[in-house]
Image (cartoon, rainbow, N blue to C red):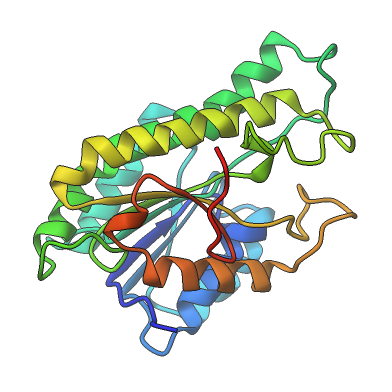
Length: 256
């Protein structure tokens, strides 16, 4: 497989689960990025302890405070990242932070719908807006015109649960707010792919599989390491034809 070769990446929700898995994999690359920005809500808190341990061993890891539901926090994070990059752009933005509320169709509430949608859909929209100047700068500083994750890309972490055609494992969990937020995220990715193509930015949405995380639960099927390795393989080969598409961690096309 071809390796990703990037100077910088930012991962949201990086203190645990898939986000932490991405951070670990980037740091272990033969040629790791010069800057790995690991974003989470409380960088100094107990839940970020593993990130802190990694940062003590890897000077290229920068733990960044970020609340994806707070526009002020997002803008402040973008300013800090820009300062750290010192004139170069951001190659890869991975919108991984997400939440789910376990509820039935009849039990869904306004509050849960708004909270989940704000985190899972609005957050990635605002992150894309805030980091667009840095993504554009990375694209402009890369050779060639073809889209790729090595140049500049937004990767939105979706789910098969958000596939309207699949409506995966409905019988095990209706999680309506989560499904709706991920279906909307898929449309956001399509919109970003159309709006940001002219700036040289590839936009893609990825289903990570049913992963063994806190959110995945006891019936999950693959490890974080398996999922992240698969997704990195997909991203390393993603090209112009893949922008605006919905792919699985194995590189298969996921139905909308």
